[in-house]
Structure formats: structure tokens, C-alpha cells
Image 1 (cartoon, rainbow, N blue to C red):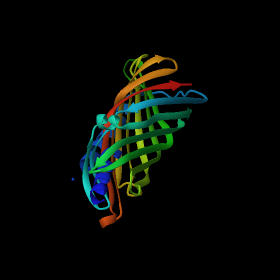
Image 2 (spheres, one colour; image 1 turned 45 degrees about the vertical axis):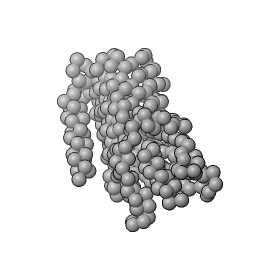
Image 3 (tube, rainbow, N blue to C red; image 1 turned 60 degrees about the horizontal axis):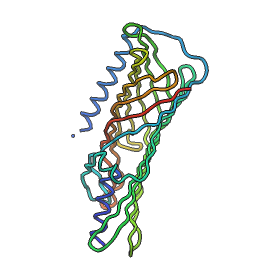
Length: 273
């Protein structure tokens, strides 16, 4: 059973999911660039009256790499999106936003469940693991303006929280089931920059940072998206997202640590009404 336990922990680390100073400096530089781009634009003060809504299903083809410690034992995580896709059982990802004037709210949800049949010696095992990430908050438009050739520019700041849940379960043919579950939430703050280069082509960039020892020691992320307008009420989006999470709890044999980078391309569509 000792070998079975080790394989469970290895699987959990691989499919569920100093560099801190360097990464934080990169985030600060990006935020400065976004703010600088906004201040160079000519200000416009008009707001659309009434509520505006956007719904955006998307696919984040994220791989994972880093370190995970379970019950005091540390192991490296190195799984690309193909590894996760091979064992994918269920997945759902989507974004929602509602605005009225300069104020708005948003929500971002991701759920991935992977399942696999494994064998350790003569023991057959059904393995299931899931990752849930839910984010929500309030955003405020702090600047609207015009860039080159009258292109529209906007900058938002946002504050909210991100919830993480990691769950894994082993079902043995002739032994008690084994499971592990961890969840936490992180406060986050961030900035978002948008630029409509033309009637057809769009750009969005966001940067956020959080945790601050309340949940994770530190979490930060970047997202860069290019868009193509299909019409008045629909856009196609493509780009890249990076998210770094450094969370730990407990000590010694009870220590759990999740120090993982998630990164990969994004494809999606947004619908506006």
C-alpha cells in the first residue's frame, strides 16, 4: 500500500495541478506600461447609459509546471495541455461581465476533471481529480480616451477574490478509497487595458496580483488577448494567459504546498447585449 500511496500523490501532483522577485518585477513593469499607454491617449468622458452585458465561453489550453508538496513529500510537476487533454473527463470555462457607466462586476470560472485507469502491481485503480478556479470582483473604468487615428482606449482597475479547489480520489478494487482535498481563496487587485485599433481588430491586456499571505503567499497573472469583431454583438478572441500560484499550509509530515505556474494559449468568443 505504500507504493500505491506514492503513485496517488505523484498523479495528484501531475494532473491536478529565488523566482518570486523576478516575476513580481515583470508584473510591475507591465502595469507601468499599461498606465503609460493610457496617459498618452486623449481623454474621452462619454459612457454608454444603462447596463451592458458580456458572456464569453473560452478554452484555456494551460499546461502546468512547478512543485507540489503533499504530506511533506515534494515532487516536480511538468504536464503540458496534451497530457491533461488525454485524460480529460469534464471541462467548463467561461467569463461574465456586467457594466453600468464606469462601474461593473465580473466573474471568471474554470472547472477541469480528469480521469484515468492505473495499475500498481496487481492492484487496479480508478483515478479522478478535479481543479476548480472561480474568480469575481468589482471593476471601475478610470480612463477612456482616443489613441492614434481616433482608436478607442480604456483602462479599468479591479478588486476581487479567486477561489481554488484541488480534489483527487483513488478508487481501489479491493481496498478503501483514498482522497485528498484542498481549497483556499486569494484577494486580488489588478488593472486591465483595452484598445480598439479599428472597427475589426481589438486588444485586451490584464495584470493582477494577490494572495498577500491571506490565502496564497503570492499569486499573480498576466493575460494578453487579440480580438476580431464579428459584428455588433460578437467577437472572437485569441491570446495567452499566465498564472503563478504559491500556496502552502501545515508543517513537516502534514505540509501541503502548491507552487505552480499555469500557462498556455486561449481561444474564445464573447457575446454582448
